[in-house]
Length: 228
Image 1 (cartoon, rainbow, N blue to C red):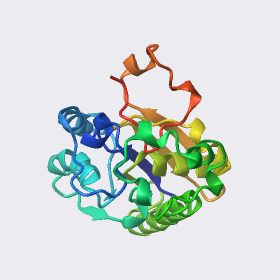
Image 2: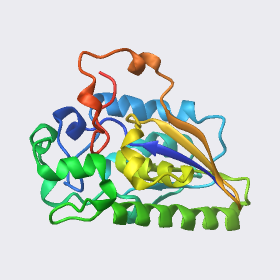
Image 3: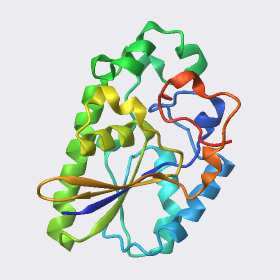
Image 4: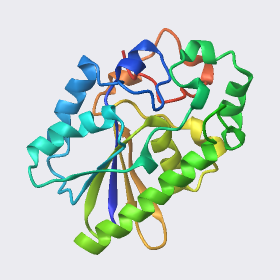
């Protein structure tokens, strides 16, 4: 079956503002995010791509645009099933403010039980994104053969939930996974099991340097802004 190249969108204006964007309109790549996206064609230059799929949100489409420009025959498909989690009433709010919400403890410790007020559950988020990947795997296999690779640009929590599924991890463990902005995660699917080939690869090891604040062990809802 196909090899999936998952790209988290580049750093956005919401990431740098510490805001949980969700489906809030008008959230775009910031200057650094645009530079990250511009470097993507060279990073993926050795990988033949059979298809390109993106969340319909602007920051994901913007991230893949340089890659599409570099490969004129590569057509972009958008799929709402890999769009950001519907955070409902939490959308557009500061993450620092949301940290005091009682639901945040559930999101961190028992995400399979978390449903965002006015939004969706994290179980539903994972289910739709996994369905999308299985569907696209079948489509790419049928059109290009089982050795084909394709790129999919999505969001932090979506990618984490897809990695958890590939590893056979319960959703309650997915906050242990972290993916930086514009990082590449690769999963090769086979008839009997998926193989995780890359996880959150940016090629920049500066993000591993100790930081002034370690975040207290909490997973960053929405994915965070990445290395400073």
